[in-house]
Amino acid sequence: MSSRTPADRTASRTVAVWDLPLRLWHWALAACVLAAWFTPTVYDGLHRIVGYTVLGLLAFRLAWGVWGSRYSRFRMVGVRLRAAPRYLWNLRRGMTGRYIGLNPAGTLMLVALLASLAVSTISGAMSVTVTFFGVWWVEDTHHYSSDAVIVLVVLHVLGVLLMGLLQRENLIRAMITGRKRIRGHS
Amino acid sequence: MADGFKDCTKLDKASWKPASEAEAKAKALGYEVRRSKIEGSCYEVYGVKEGKLYELFYSPEDLSLKKTIAK
Image (cartoon, rainbow over all chains, first blue to last red; front, side):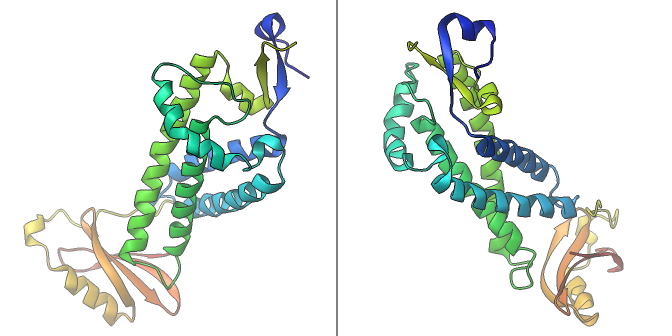
């Protein structure tokens, strides 16, 4: 059921968007990326554990992109990606459009984060194999892709805050409760 | 748990012995040397021995082995 805050009661109802496995996945991934961020070299054991966990979480996300509920699926990713450049351009005038699930900018961020996380975790795992230990391009790839993840995470958080302001909706809460407002319907 | 290691010498960098000598010392211990780099005031040598991964930290001052970390 919808949460009963005053804002909800006055003008809008809520709809289930993010299913429970997706939400758990999101916050587990956030915790792991944060942990990995602060543990390279010095806390090598912990860094590796969270790295392998992220690899597992990425595999889950790919599966959930096929078998998850409506807004977890990757069905619309291609369409949204093609719409992303125009969408970002229109954002300068505060035009956000109406999307229940991920908007084109969010989809672009999803793909960029999944890709950079995949490169980061795979190169990280490679760097502790006998074959690739101390191989410069594996280390460089791990460093640069991990830096890219950090930059993207910062942009992701800023993007969520901006979108929340423009649409007057607490999107962080939406990723906790799984529900978003629908306006203009009753 | 914490295994970052970076303090090996206070000697000025200009007076350091070459990194190749640190690599040679690791080779003499039976390591297959993959590469070496400067980590803080240490030479960090990446070595493989019997299928296991090691990081060896040498002092650039006297090439003494300061620390061995099994990865």
